[in-house]
Length: 415
Image (cartoon, rainbow, N blue to C red; front, side, top):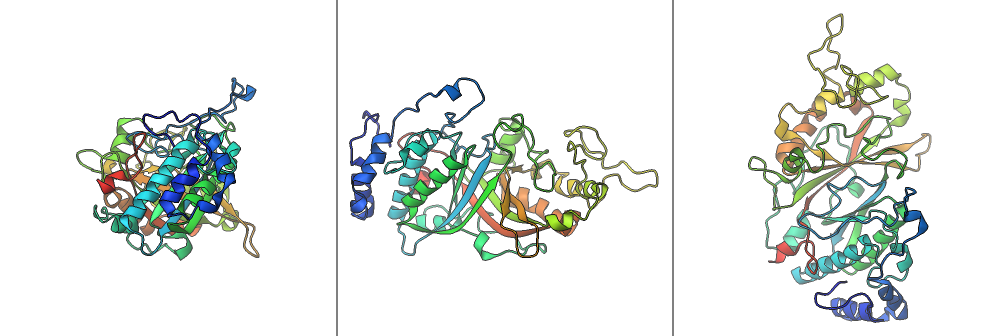
């Protein structure tokens, strides 16, 4: 961890053991010499390898951790991600919560910059971060423990939807860690380090692992495809644009719960690929409202063409049907837009089926009630894709602002 006013390039062996001794009241005293190995790697620069010289490898690429806003929202989506929901242990005090957030922020800051975590016994695994980001989310329970800021509107939960078949193992949580990178090894190592940080304070409620196309498979900026073959996220506002700022972080009309903060809805959506296989291509495209080949609306020829919802067939039926997902998901009111950053998942098939797959739908917006909920209600009422999709998990988190060097994510709760 970087300490202002001190040279942090060559940490002294055992420094991490002493800090954890202070935080845990001696619980880490048995870590011993192995922990010191990791502390000697912390702060070391990433060695430049020949593969970083222009052949497309991106292992040494980093995304800044510190800043007014957290990384992992407007960051170009990485190839691999894991969402970890943790529950605070009973009896957690505000001071212990503060210690946890400091510890997690310190190690996340190191790991995302290609440096070993403080007591990292496999520090070599941290040296190629591959655009690793760690994003923190706060659930209702965390706000109640902190006791200084009311639970933001919308974060306490979503309305009930008729299409939901939610299971407890993918719902709720006090603290979210969203860990993403272009290398699954970077994700796995960061997950282990941060769970080691957390185990004295929390228990794991659930974990969801997802993926997109591997780095280099497609040109950067290509819209991802879900496992239905559908382009997913065509209507997203572009990060950095005025529209993105309004949708994700709010403006005078739609305000976020905190300056530079936003909110995240995570929906685990099971996709019945076995039944989807029974539908012909034209039926799939009518259900989606877009051409599967290039994502163009059925009334256009290119992915980003504006759909013409007034267009009709020669016999007078809408070209894009009322039940098409495109029509139901696209709001007429521009204030209802969201920013989606989804990942696919593919689990072990159940007995008698070919697949157990779906989408980890991650929706960022300034105001859940004014942006996400109206869209979800329209999908709940009439979306033909509901025949093949079922939400089985649902969780809501407030995404706090970022932090400056020497600070920690969530420090505003303790000001």
